[in-house]
Amino acid sequence: QTQRRRGVLYDDDPKSRRRRVVPLPGLCIAPLRWHRMRQAAARAKAGETWATGSDYVFTTRTGRPVEPRNVYRSFTRVAQSAGIRVVRLHDARHGTATLLTAAGVAPRVVMEILGHSQISITMDVYTHVVQDTQREAMSHMDRLLRKRPGRQ
Image (cartoon, rainbow, N blue to C red):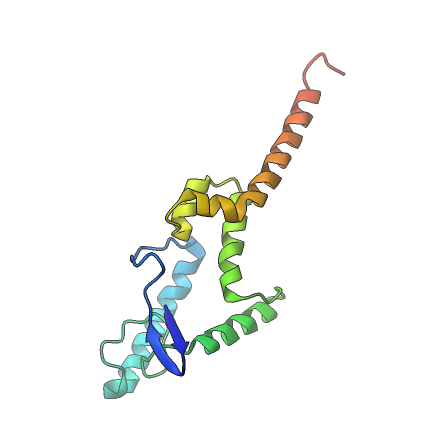
């Protein structure tokens, strides 16, 4: 992750200090491929002004890292144009976990997607969603039991 602290832009490792593959929904693949093609064209156009050794997915026109503040501005603009409530960028991560949990995805899988080191971290943050899902499951059970043959 790229951060700016005390006026200096630098790359920082994630909390776990390990790099990992982050799974993406299929609908994200085509836009990322399109972006890679546009970036290759920008790199060719920039020529020698392209930042040496730049392997960022999202960059400026010259291959340098995007300012974190500008990432948030873009995120805000996209959210507003989609009619979605603007939240902190990190809250989008929580939203993903909440949706996965509410969809019945196993907590261990959610933990792995989020990169939590322990299941307890995932469960501490998303227990309310699991409880809501359990209540919904019990309401389904109520409906099923009431529909038993021979029972009124």
